[in-house]
Amino acid sequence: MCRLDLRAPRLRQLLDEDLDRRRERHGRERAEHAEQGPEEGHGENDEERGEVDRLPLDLRGEDVVLVYQQVENNILTPKIQGKAVELSGFFIIVAVTLFGALLGVLGALTAVPLAATIQIFIQELTKARREKVAEARAAAASGGGGAAPV
Image 1: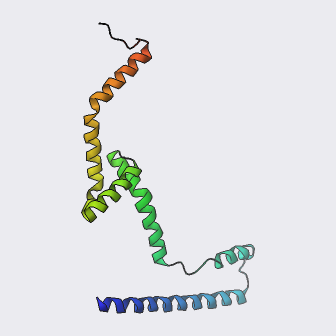
Image 2 (image 1 turned 45 degrees about the vertical axis):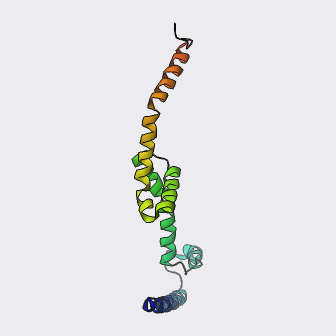
Image 3 (image 1 turned 90 degrees about the horizontal axis):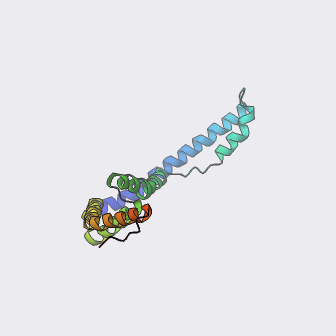
């Protein structure tokens, strides 16, 4: 455990040094390019190139991965799983959070199938009631009055 803690700062230092070297090389290349003057057919794009040069250079791979994971975990995965098991994304997020809090990692992994099972169970329990309500609505819409003869 201690070895891992010692290596992490060293790795960060090596990455920072590499980033500094790349920035210096980029600066030299820009200076050389400025001395050569605009290339033929590219004079009108110098301002656009200047805009690109002003972008922040410290966008790291870990930042990109973090954004990607957030989009995938909070938007894409609930939508895809919701369509697969016919649950809304909201209920999937609630199920994963609830089962994850109650049962840990195993609960989070089994949350979507369990939520789908619960949904099917509830649908089967309420099936007769929903059919009666649908029949009553159909009878009311057709003008039958809804009252059954005695």
